[in-house]
Amino acid sequence: MLKTNFLGVELASPLMNASGVHCMSIEELEELANSQAGAFITKTATQLEREGNSKPRYYDTKLGSINSMGLPNKGLDYYLNYVIERQQQGTQLQFLSVTEMSYEENINLLSKIQRSGYQGVTEFNLSCPNVPGKPQIAYDFELTKKLLSEVFTFFTKPLGVKLPPYFDIAHFDEMATILNKFPLTYVNSVNSIGNGLCINIDKEQVVIKPKGGFGGLGGEYIKPTALANVRAFRERLNPNIKIIGTGGVINGKDVFEHILCGADLVQVGTTLHKEGVDVFTRLNEELKVIMKEKGYTSLEQFRGRLKII
Ligand code: DHB
Image 1: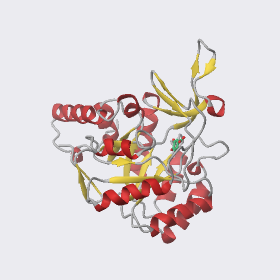
Image 2: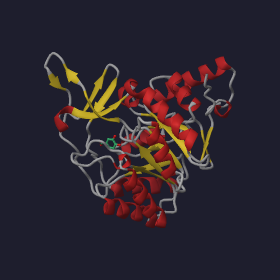
Image 3: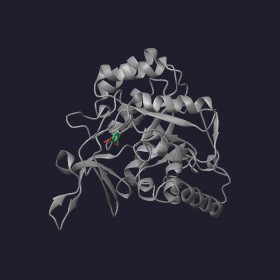
Image 4: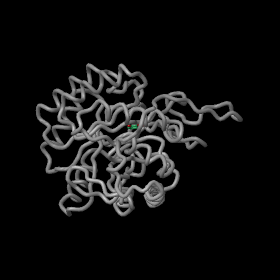
């Protein structure tokens, strides 16, 4: 019932983790691989291992989460070796997430993946909001165009991009026009809504330490923005560019809504952090119940079919 074809691979479910949650170590990645998620993705890797920002740097709130992790990760080789090893075992679909701090470093990182034995999907994260002094790449349209133009002179493996949320129709238009110039496998919308601020009123204090308390928002706060971005890009992107919907998935209804807006796969971040990998079992069941109630037997029957009035 939940079968989803992605890059010619038949997945048992459209669900996977959002990069950053439950995917830092091989132990966590193995738990995802053994869960009811249809696919999984690594923590965004940089060339070298990073400690990330100082703690506390992640905080759960009633309506979601705020984080300023600062790209802690074990370095590209750790994740690249893991996904190469797993692909040789021919098991489930896996994604490698990467980014770097400068234009040249991004090119070098992707060149290294191109030269490696990895044949799977790479997610190029153009939207980390949390590295002090480093703006999110995909809010700079010219830079995004220039970077992707260079990447696609040499990169021939499946590549997707992770985007920040946009809030203006002109920005949806402009970014979609840029993305349509490239042979992208997919677009992932959205990353956390950058630089929110959550406050502990008793202490009259921010809840995370880095950047004076500013951090990326996830969870219930961001679902309408996430759905708008999925819908807007599905309406504008070439049909061969797939969409991964991310943001505000708490229950099966949220998964249904993402797919109705056009998502091929749906990622779970904050709720996975709160519940652990059993969340995928729950969400699969809740989605199936909704589909049964509505008389649907496959995701294709409602994917992208949001009605307007
Ligand atoms: C981090 C946060 C993000 O939203 C992201 O896309 C990448 C990294 C982080 O702070 O580690």
